[in-house]
Amino acid sequence: MSLVKPARLIGFHAGGRLGIVGEDGSGERFLDFDAPRQRRWQFGPTLPDGRIVLHSFEDTTTARMVTGEVDVNLWLYDLRSGRLDPLHVADRPSRFFTCAAAFADGRRLLAGAMVGGAQHLYLLDADGGACRPLTHPGQGFHYGVDLSPDQTRIACHVTGDKSGRYPRVYPYSIEVIDIAGGGRVMVAARTGHLYFAPVWSAAGDRLAYLDCHAAVDPAHFAADLCIGRPDGTAHRVVTCGQSHWFGTSYGVAGHRGGGSNMTSWIPGQERITWTRLLPDSHADARYDASRPDHQELLHAPELARGGTQLCALDPDSGDAAEITAAEEGRWDYHASWSAAGDAVAFSRARVTQPPELWIAAADGLSARRLSAGYDRWGAGFGRWLT
Image (tube, rainbow, N blue to C red; front, side):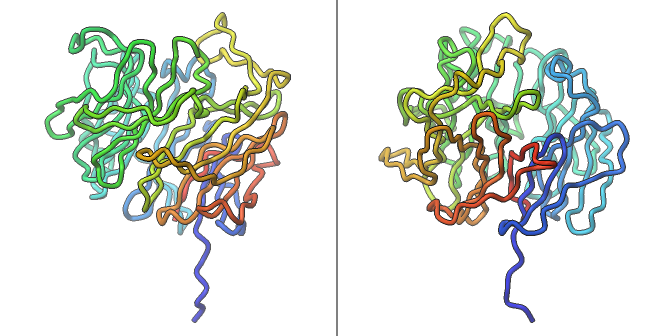
C-alpha cells in the first residue's frame, strides 16, 4: 500500500472555463461540460458530501450582468466521478440566482437573487426546494456573504437600505443577520466609507473586513483592513494609508480581468491576509466616471507602477510577516488558504501579461507556478477543493 498522499486539488477560473490542478502541479485539466448556451462557469460552495455547486451564465454582457438580466443555472458537480446534474430551484425568485454558501448540515443552501434591482438573500433546501427569503425589499442590496462558524448568523455588506432603520443611507455597511429570527446588527457604517466583505474568525467572536475611502477613491483601488465584533462593538482600523489592494485590474488588452480582493483569516492562526501595496502603487487602469456602471476602468498599462505582496497580519499587535516578497511590477492577490493553513494559493500578475495561479507554503517558501490557464489566457480565483 502506498504511503504517498495524493495531491490536494485546487480549482480555478480560466477565461470563463473551470480548471483543476494538484497542489504539486500535477493533473492540470479543464472541465468541458455538455451544456449548450453556457458562456461562463464559476465554482460555488462545496457540500459536506464533496459535491460542488457550479454556476453557469448564459450571457456575460456587463450591463446585463449588473442588472440581473442574465440567466444563471445551478449544477451539482461530483469531483470524483465527473457527474454533472442540474440543481433545479423550486419557486425561483429571479433569473439571476446564485448560491453563496452551503450549511454544514448538508441540508440547506444560502443564495442570492436579483429582485427589483437589488440582491436579496434566500434560504433553500439542498435539493432546490423550499426557497424562502431571508431579506426583503427596502432592506438593501446584500452580498459578500459569510456564514458564522456556528451556522446561526450571516455577515455581509449592504448598500441602498431604504427601510428607515438607520438615520441615513450609508454607501456600504457591514451587518450581521440572525438566520432564525431575521434580526440585524450594524457592525460598521460611516459616510464616505465603503465597508466590504466581512469574514468570521474561527471562534466566531470577531469579523475582519475592508474599509475603502470611496469618496476619494471611486475606482475602489485600495482599502484598509478592519476588525469588529458581531455585536456591533469594537470596530477598529488595523492598517493605515489605504494599503490593501482592493479593486484588482490585470491581464492583457482585449482580455481583461478584475474582481474584489478581500481579506481572510488564516486557518489555525489569529492573523489575517493583507495584500500590501508597495508605496505609491497604481494599477494598470484608468478610471473614467463618464462610462457606464462597472465599465469605468480602462486598460492603461502606462500608468502602472509598484505592485503588491501577500502578508500575514496580526490585527492585535500590528505585526506583519511577509509571505511573498515585494517586487516592482509584480502583483500578488486573491489568496486562498488550505484548510490546514499550511499552504496558500494565489494569483500573480505582471503588467501586460496574463495572470497565473501560484502556490506557496504558509511562510512563503517553495513558491511555484501551478497554471497559466487555458491556452495561456490566464488563471485565477484559486480555491481548495480537497
